[in-house]
Length: 483
Image (cartoon, rainbow, N blue to C red; front, side):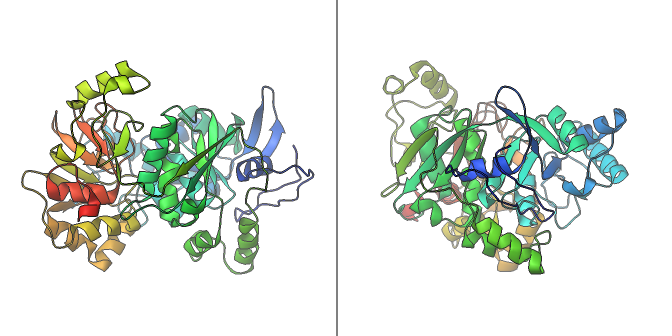
């Protein structure tokens, strides 16, 4: 262990350092949580929060109990119903996912039996895990957090070190509040400049992944920095960190600042009174040192960057909305590009703005927060979805849904022709229930455009909430700057 540190109940850390070497924010959080150094560059880390959802939470809790163990600290375990819940209005415990009711019942029973805080279907705090845990102040700067979901790095947007794990790793952490994990390499991704009109965080991260590739950050933890990142709101930073895994990264982090303090203050699980003052000081000190070393650095100049959209079956298959479908021979892996174009039924040289769509989907842990809904509503207001286009909006949490309704955003979506749904993961991924028709072409604010991701044979184009909204109105992939 390289520093004398301890994690407090409020999520703050004692940052007394016994070395003079400059360190990144990633290394600082890591070092503060080392319980023991193991072999092969692996550390045994203290885990501050264990986050569960309905698809695996019941399994993990039951496994601990079946092994005759107890939860190390049930107060550090939180769960929500999100993956298999019905998002259609008027929902109850029924779910469109085959076998989904079993997951819901098992999770509910185990959480009750073991005293774990659970945001159940009817709970006003319910929602997608990576939306509700920051929203409730459970995810805090400087903490380590795990969840059996690959997009757990979303929480790096609030200055945490968070990553997805398997159910077995989750069981170990539930019983010991620790996890053995290899220290990742570090990568600094700088975004410099001022993006153009209607260019948001989703466009920034798609541009980065297109630049470095879907495996470009494999084995790394990414720190997002630069003038364009400092200008982003906290929810937008979560979008960046959410999709760090789509570049192969272990996690992503944005260092805390005053914007983050404004976002966190007063949230239900955030510290209060003198504890808040102490935490706020520690969080603002949690930044990368000047000359901190990184294993890799990349810089993206975003002046003049336009809205991005994917054309293939990987997030790296992204380009400007005003561009054309590339020729496979121009790309690093022509064979993979040809397969992607065959699946997407696109031809090289086709103007992306001419590609007709069947559906538009706004939702997921990537882009379904209140700020995302506001961005889309600004494009939709006073207009109607094109004839023949199915348009769906799934707020990221019940709190987001209610806040949007208080602002009248729900009427904007409904008047434009969108379905206004309850919160949940919904059509972000296909689990055997809700789906788009085979062969449908969908523009989506989600994080993955893999083959069959939103249903067998469905063709998904990833884009920002603004581009999703503009495309829904046009009936084709459309530039939101034209609205």
